[in-house]
Length: 143
Picture 1 (cartoon, rainbow, N blue to C red):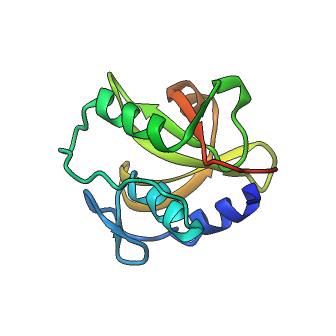
Picture 2: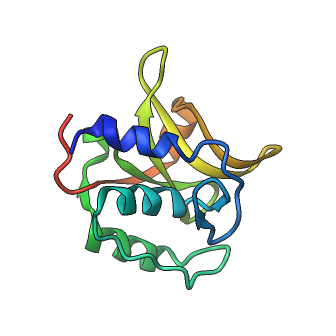
């Protein structure tokens, strides 16, 4: 599959309301729900773990991602990759890398903060880049 297909599927979720453990695009998604939605639309086997609290256990989250996606080095990040983000302490947030219209990368993710509570896309600026802890790729992705 092409990376652009993954990004297009992720963009289908834009504007969907944020809800913890939400899994229905157009109704409610959380940050894990966006990559799960994309995987389901692509027919990729991606276990959907929903037994987590508002602050997921990082070890469990990493293990689940390692089982179903291919981890890649941060410096190899490309379009359509899934990124794991830390805000203050432990990583707990997921997003999908997209192409920013004015060059560089953007981030598609379900965000609940800064006056927003929905799936958004914005430039992956230096602040957001510094928050990325790890990167995974859907199996079989081609640029």
